[in-house]
Length: 610
Image (tube, rainbow, N blue to C red; front, side, top):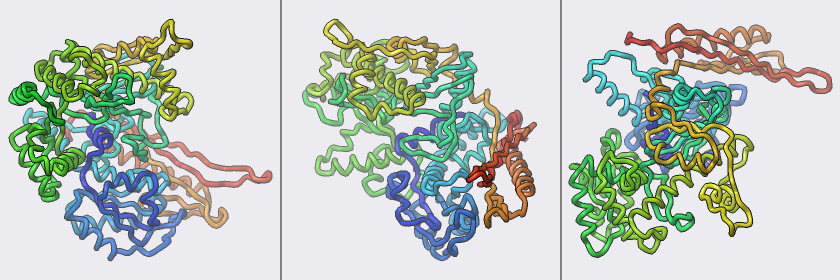
């Protein structure tokens, strides 16, 4: 199972409420790595404790403070995240607080040291918080899939694709859902390589919510060893170097005076009106009634509907949120119906926004998918609903609708804007990977060169003609790419490859993947090299010689990697170990700074339930 659930949740700012317990952190830690913004007002507790860079206890753990925080937070959160200062060098305090959470609550809990062995405490705390926030989401998905498997009489192991393209047993994925960010794109990259036969290429995977772009060199995906960036958050999850953009067939069409077409696409995903009316035919009647009115309202052509059950959010809704939730019990509701009382419309809109942010509800509005239905590129759902939505969009925004003359002109503008934003994304990724430059930080140059080339604005009146050429094949996969990417490739003067079965490249990649688990241990010198300390997940061990320390690290890393691979669902496991010593020469004398031992266990997934 490959899934975009975690990626979409971070891109759209969704997730369950979490309680973050920071052990030994300074108070200003919240202002680093975007941690405060990521918490979105969820409770945070600073607890005395933590360790030094060498793994020695720097302060006693205040278990009483931890207990008070856990008991206070539990009624308001769906999960807990724990991050201790230098816990990757000694996880004792994280483990103690985790045990306390399990004794006092039934909430899932995440420890930072379980997700990464790298330093950078604030980012580790961020990754732990995001992981905890995603657990309830993945739980519901796994339950739904298992229910379906039981109904169909399928007795097979359920595995999930990780962000590096490897597979992991669903039970382990439930503990570390953050490792499934970019799961969908990673599977798609593996599938694109398998289906296209290309070795050097740019892979573009366009779905309903996002566009994901990755590069392959020599047949291997380029990896992001600094940690995957999704939704503006830099995590500590090593994954395929995927660049994710909030641009998909189901992205909302919005007004924008800054764009040449007078509108912009995304980043918010909504349900296309054509799909909504296909699934709920009564909504077409609502759209037609709105079209018959002489005057428009700001909420014409917009609906809201439930996306998932309340689950752990039960009892956490405000009175207005509960009112909105109950109003949608029987299906989609027109936004205008919720806003009938203008005196409270602002507060109701805020309540709707909060429910959408938490992933409980999803809006419905006009999208590129609707424009494609009107222009005849797609005929899957209700063309009539798309047509009515476009008419309402134009009527409400006649002065700011991008200068569109009629519905057809408006829809062509929507598709041209998709081409422009998709082309910008491709060029931006190539420039960033090849030259380390962010094109978006130079808006004037982007407009003069990138936009000009993509919009084909050259002509006899231009002093300067601009043309761009991509020197690698553009492999496009995903259901909507046939509609949107031929003009992108044409304007980048490159070969477009839409391989056979491109629409299921994601599934092909999931099947083609294998299980891989890596364990990285560090050896650090103590007392000017008199002792060597091996930092283990269960604690630290000291040795008097490097050979003894290295033997211990190799043995422990190998055993742990193999155990994790088998727990992840692998059989026929093979383990490879790499040891890297870090030495420098100072004034002709060699100085030992430490070692890194990495064990990588690889195996094929079990093909039948055990």
